[in-house]
Length: 325
Image (cartoon, rainbow, N blue to C red):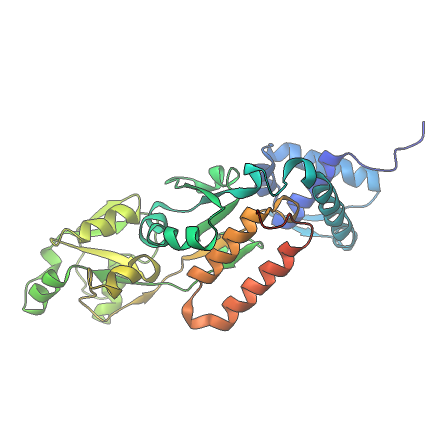
């Protein structure tokens, strides 16, 4: 029997996802498979082609020269298949083409996204948005979303993310409480709030504020699983919360919260935007992605923002359904 000319689609999907993420685990999450299944599909493809597609390092992957040469052909094939299926599954008149799911943190959804949803609706009235806000292990639920905004660090950024802004951490409180502090009230004894899992803490901020790591007091801090809780506690007027630029920009601008101290610390964490795989993008994911980049990218980097928006538009213009009528 002659060897088939084409490898199975499942092998190609596993290869494309693993090449995009440079991770079998991330590819498995996206395709709803196990890591071992992805690895087996890739090895089957390599056996079929007679060439290794990846160099396997300790807890890392990189494409071989053959893999890098083969990847564009696989992606182009998926784009052609996706375009051919559009008349049946993604036409401009289907609800599926208009619906997109965004995953982000509860804090980002509460303080940044929700106040701007009316602007999104005005810009794209035909769009139907679903917002999901997991608290723990968002990578497990990210596979169910079309677009994700993730609060991450460089080590977890990945190759397919777009950094939205640089963040600095600082305490916030109500204007009335800030006035009491300015008049001499000891803020160390006030309720202090913060979010777990963030490197820029009250103690690191206090070290910067004091100008020395020596003899700084250990602060009693109340912790929450999300900034939606810790920052909301500051609105009560009885305590201070450790916050960062993106989440309190609106409250600072309208005077609901203020910064009682000038000291800030640069954060390791930042918000990054993740798009669907190229062959899975739709008009809805494109519209949302472009809006998010324009709305939430660092205003001090307007040229970079414009470049990112144009780049996204160019990437998504190919083989996508038109804007719904």
